[in-house]
Length: 357
Ligand SMILES: [Zn+2]
Image 1 (cartoon, helix red, strand yellow):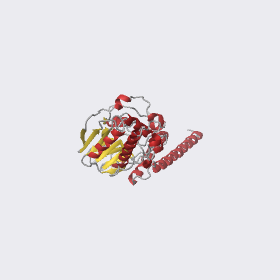
Image 2 (cartoon, helix red, strand yellow; image 1 turned 180 degrees about the horizontal axis):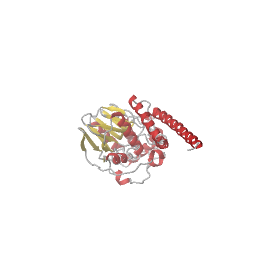
Image 3 (spheres, protein in one colour; image 1 turned 90 degrees about the vertical axis):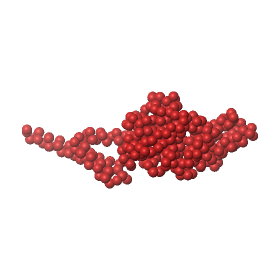
Image 4 (tube, protein in one colour; image 1 turned 30 degrees about the vertical axis):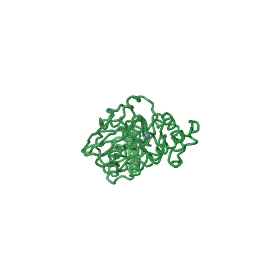
């Protein structure tokens, strides 16, 4: 080996070491910033793993970092709402490229040996990140059963994640199977950014019900209750835990924002609310909204009652479809989110419903 060659090798080695150090530093910085707010143990563990990876193969390590930054980050943090129950609360908004469909609520129940999950969010990526966040919070349990509240796709497009990873049983309305199939471009596929919807597949549910269905997972009992009439949609389910009196209402209940009546019926909504009330729940998680205490259903009860009373009175006074939005308003709700977008449509839908009676 001559002097030149030795010099070349020396320079190359120096370059390699410098680039390794640069990547290590970058990884350390990423690892630290990603771990903000987590426990000390986790923060310490991450940089160590990153350094090992970098020394072994700098290029591979640099590539491995890339997908993590390109996938949409929902920044999910579970909130505990009752014993063994955590939820991810979505924004009080329509789906937008910015929220990537994170505008509905999705909940986890921890049982003795597994999770039961109510609704699965707007995408595969969402479900994956929700599971990761829950695992960090309470441990990596398998997900055994999923219950879907209704057919709107902000509530169940995460199903495939749980089916693929755990073979979870999917309990949900039969319309999910009759109206949607793999490859369909539903609302979330149109609105969500590519890095949030990528990998999302429509799969059928395994079990639909017409009557109450009870099951037990890890020593905790659950009741799935179908609403026998059109309420928020043609087929709505709610889930009740009889021992702890926690009720997952899906979109039969919203608070803080106005509901969307495009697929629903006011009379069915009122019936569903009375079925929910009859359960004697103590904690209720709405499909959209943050209120879970004893007042959780108050807004929904008032909204549908006022809508019904005012529209029936208007019809009584021969108000027709072209005038109904001038005559019937719900000023009590004007400060709630989405009032301007949804309320006058809701009044029109309700007019059609009561006009046919
Ligand atoms: Zn919804």
